Amino acid sequence: MKKRLWFIAPLLTAALLLAACGGGGAGGGSESGGQGGGKKQVTVGLALSTLNNPYFVTLRDGAQKAADAAGVKLIVADAGNDLSKQTSQIEDFITQKVDVIVVNPVDSDGIVPAVQKANDAHIPVIAVDRGVNGGKVATTIASDNVEAGKMAAEALFKALGGSGKVAELEGVPGASATRDRGKGFDQAVQANSGIQVVAKQTANFDRSQGLSVMENILQANPDLNGVFAENDEMALGALQAIKNAGKAVKVVGIDGTDDALKAIKAGDMVATVAQQPEWMGKTAVEDAVKLAQGGSIDQAFTAAPLTLIDASNVDQYLK
Amino acid sequence: MKRLHWVDYGLVIGFLALAGALTAASPVFLTWSNLMNVARQVSINGLLAAGETFVVLSAGIDISVGSTMALAGAVVAGVGLAHGFALGGLAALLVGTAVGLANGLFVVRFRVPAFIATLAMLGIARGATLIYTQGRPISGLPESFLFIGNGWLGPVPFPVVLMLATYAAAHVTLRYTAFGRYVYAVGGNARAARYAGIHTEKVLYAVYAIAGFLAAVGGIVLTSRLASADPQAGVGIELDAIAAVVLGGASLFGGEGSVLRTLLGALILGVLNNGMNLLNVSPFYQEVIKGAVILFAVVVGNWRPRSQGQFKTGG
Image 1: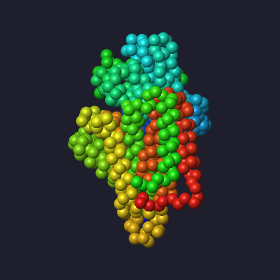
Image 2: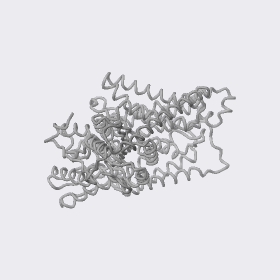
Image 3: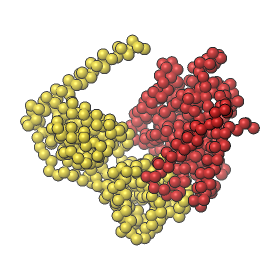
């Protein structure tokens, strides 16, 4: 056992050295040929909050496609929703001298020191899906979560005919998406006097928790009319609970995942608001290439398109 | 019947006090439909916690059960859709047991501390789940498969029956079989157990295999309940399973505890979650309340009359 481990150690060291040399070479190119553009190999570092979520897998796919199309090298780092891990991944990108860093922060505030380090190293940073609350960011590509919450809530209230008892399934407490989507929901509630919010509970953006929390809410509110879920996973869990209880409660979600689209097609779910992670990943890499080739980006915030998907248009989004 | 330990009184009183408070606070708490609702919600964590009890009794710990559950849940969906759900279920149970045996291998054969071995497995099994599912949920499962998680046997949900049967079997195993006594003996004093002629290695392999197997059962129930296999399923649930075991008064140093107390621990956690939802408690306070209840229970559980001996065997 021990002998084998000793055998592996030098191999690992060699591999690391090789990787470091490769990164260094690309970085050297960027210093000398940065203004010329086009000829050298551009390297983009993509730091994702997590790949343990279909949404971010799709975002990565979009980024990879754009990278392949532009002929640039894309290095993807998955932080597993761990801020300190993401910070060291960005430090690694800086050491490897990537040309541009695209970051999808685990935490918008916590990532600021890492972004400042990239600023100090003169590596441009692009934020995607979530903003960065400090440092210098070339552009932020994200959808407006307040608007998404408002759109989903209005679709629900319309389906309820403007009145009824509604429950809100909230995301991870304190997360920016939870705050913003909840804010959009609150705005829509204020505009609809017939809507009564009888429960506000968290299910942490998780499908199985959406199921059990919804079961509990239905126990306390058997006359519930509608559910606003801050993401599709919780909405789908809630649907299962409603189905098991044999009730007719209308459900909306946000994100536009494949399973949600299927549920809308089947008539179980009213609507979802689709974000476009693939578009975001693609646009981020395209912008990164622009920056690496000496160009600039005019707008500080690029709003990713939002689409309300319901029974009327679900067919064009179903794969 | 069995001699009752003082811990049992504390647990039962605590549970009844909590249930009484909730009955007073919410008119729906003490209804059959809500009680069955809680029982069904407890069933998955209950299955994991039953397996975890075996490991904790042997003075080990298994923090990989959540990932193992997710992996088995994905396997039953993937294999089930391709080759039928009888085979899918079998494959899931085999995978779960294999993961448990692998944990046992590293703990026994390579003497890796249980926490480290299963921490590594927590990552490996989660990664395997992501690879197998390509990071996306597997859905479109047939109605017949959904019975396991959502069906009823008379007035009782099927997963609750499954959980109770598991606890009955686990209780009988730990109390009335030689193997059960070996588990307590190995956890109480491994060296003494070895000198007494017990094959401690075999016992340790078995407890990790049981934990993996029951995690797989939990995974099958969860996939059926959600009508889909989610690669993110059960992130952090190992902590709930361990909390149930510890709430039940088991010692993390091994040799002390009982599976029926674990069941009470799991029920307390489930009732607490249910009650906070019924009363629409703000999510910000829920975590604090849950943490406080666990601390309170463990502090009370740690207090013990010094003179009273702890039983080290099931009998």
